[in-house]
Amino acid sequence: MLSALARPVGAALRRGFSTSAQNNAKVAVLGASGGIGQPLSLLLKNSPLVSRLTLYDIAHTPGVAADLSHIETRATVKGYLGPEQLPECLKGCDVVVIPAGVPRKPGMTRDDLFNTNATIVATLTAACAQHCPEAMVCIIANPVNSTIPITAEVYKKHGVYNPNKIFGVTTLDIVRANAFVAELKGLDPARVSVPVIGGHAGKTIIPLISQCTPKVDFPQDQLATLIGRIQEAGTEVVKAKAGAGSATLSMAYAGARFVFSLVDAINGKEGVIECSFVESKETDCPYFSTPILLGKKGIEKNLGIGKITPFEEKMIAAAIPELKASIKKGEEFVKNMK
Image 1 (cartoon, helix red, strand yellow):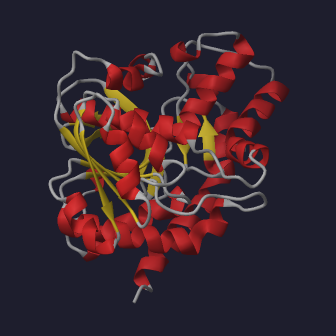
Image 2 (cartoon, one colour):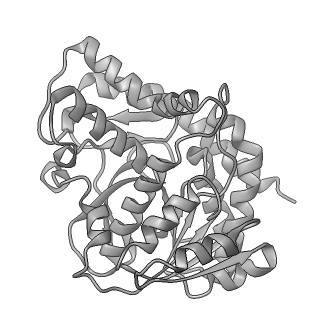
Image 3 (cartoon, helix red, strand yellow):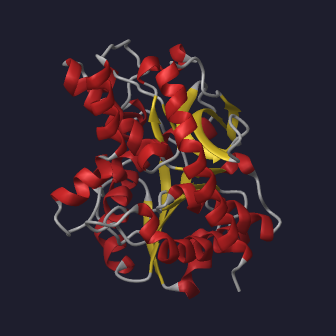
């Protein structure tokens, strides 16, 4: 597993910009006018992997689409506004990315977003289940530890659930881990690859520094500080923006990286691996993030946790109760929906 993970980190994103790949992915961004949606749509428009980009939101999408459509790349761009136009936006899509929802403000946890974002994700994924049931669905909307179970339950209600096609995008945790390790060790960040497993909030974010490529070592106190920083990096951005939003630009980059990896795999590229929060039998949590081998039909193989240290084992044990509670909360939300 380690050798498969040992690849340049920005490779997927740079492949997204390469001119040699001429592919025809039809991608929809739901929540395209927001803080993540706009830069994410820009990165997708820049990619020769994407031939059609459809943008949906409840405000401003025609303007965002008009602006992006002037960029001299091959993807056609169309904006859709409001619930009545959502079905048209989704028709024929290969990949749907959902950054829609409200961002965190200082003092808020990802859980504080639950009620608003749970409703948004349930509504949007119900539309996906009806209008593009075969598409790969990438959920960015927080709290991911609950919004992925919500998506799964919505798809089950519509009778189209395929666990290999529903992904919680945790890529930002990996991107941050790579950047922070590179900074501490004076390495080229594009050459650093740290698997991050578990979930996508606080202590459920488990960076496996022992599996980092290239191999790195930290004294225990420095390791604890590094892991704490990776786990709380979202809060670091929320505080630095002082009420003006959360991590939008780095999240857009991470979301684009995941989409490009997925499209590469759909196109038949072999050995494409990304960590993602998915339905899982790797622990006694029904959903868990681990490195995933991506293929033409989504998840080809869950590569599991691999060899870890006793310290990392403890982190997993500490994360499981919180993960289980977040998952149950998501499942219960759909059960209780009118």
